[in-house]
Amino acid sequence: MARKSDKYQAELERLQILLVETQAWTIDKGRKTVIVFEGRDTAGKDGAIKRITEHMALRQTRVVALPKPTDRETSQWYFQRYVTHLPAAGETVLFNRSWYNRAGVERVMGFCEPGQYARFLEDAPHFERMLADGGLKIIKLWLDISRAEQAERLASRVADPLKRFKVSSLDAEAQDRWDDYTAARDRMLDQTDHPAAPWTVVATDRKKTARLNIMRYILKAIGGPGEAGPEPDPGVVFPAAKSDGRLAA
Image (cartoon, rainbow, N blue to C red):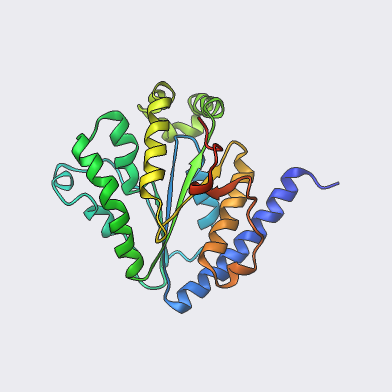
């Protein structure tokens, strides 16, 4: 009998091959694709992005993980520093956290003013509709995780020397301010979910299962050869608008 790890690797390879075929199609068609990865700390953004991009075309694929904004950037239009990283024809850009920083960590940690936060929630759907009208395919993923699972992963980061660069001074705040982050998440999903760029939720307590289902969903969302791929598990991947109490409280 095949071990679970063998089945995972076989399915991962099958999906990666389909991703390569699908990207070749997007390059040929000149498609512009943006994939936004958001979620609580330790929800698995890095691991999912690594598996997705592992065999994709280097010149047509970019992962964007921006640092804290400079003084100059904080004086600019909020979306300005993200616009410079958007894809041209045939390119795929994956944002490992995005403009939605304002609706999450900035809101919870007090890094922005209440007026800036409220304006962002109003502006984000308009910004995304402009992008969609300009021919960009926008895929927005919220990676959800339970409080207990997050606590375990945070502890493992500290104990593992290979995860040194994953450790952040804000890690403790993820648990201490859990309820604040929950409220910020719920409001963000409610106010910035719209037809041009809907939110899709991924339950990530089972890390490998989540990775495979993220890939399945992305393939379906992009289209082309991806349409022939397997369906994502609706118990793992589901529209934010139909979460029906399935989000981690």
